[in-house]
Length: 292
Image 1 (cartoon, one colour):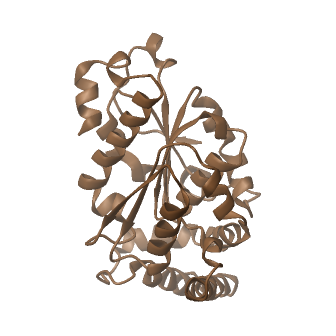
Image 2 (cartoon, rainbow, N blue to C red):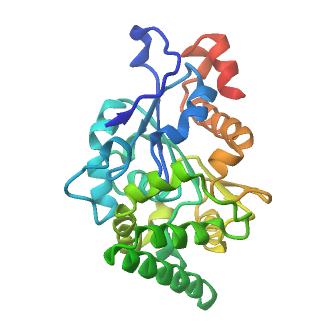
């Protein structure tokens, strides 16, 4: 089910001419994560923020995905609804799914731009001894979190998970309401880890990408994801990296005032490169809103 985010829409007759933005959230999140990005883009694009299987409105899904390819199949309804060119945005585990859509899916030929915010693609780090240590540490975290979940210790699993993703950022306690929502969705974490570690040949897939790609990393994030972004940037000819030294892994939320305008500009440039200037698709005020 696609999360409903209230944004202004252009006239229905023009809607099919527009490219669509599909934004995929992180583990333990929901499509509501992208409300401010939808507001940033305004009426310039149709905006889809689906709940990934196991989260939000999809929390009761029966057959949870064990691979990124299966995650893409679960999202095929939304991707089909977003007819025409697609601008993909993905954060963390959602970034891994967005990468899979852009590189090896029936929808890859429709991707006009790609934005990856610290995508969880750990197998990319198996080529050097230093990077393999990062991969091994993340595998250890995945094992510990999964064992906690299997033993019924969801609270401990959430604490381990959050402690890792906080990186070197502040260890602020979660509000009780947020912790409760995470506990309710915690079982999906084991599936997310399994799918991320099952994805192979990431470097080869990244080298094949030919769409404009924007990569984000935060200086307070775990070095694992900072390194993944560095490696992707080195492999991909079409990639631009934006590093925010004072940001952590949740930078789409904590640093939305910097991240969202950059995504909007990236999307606008990709549309122009494709020969579809935003000014031809949307009212002037909508273009202004998309450019931030």
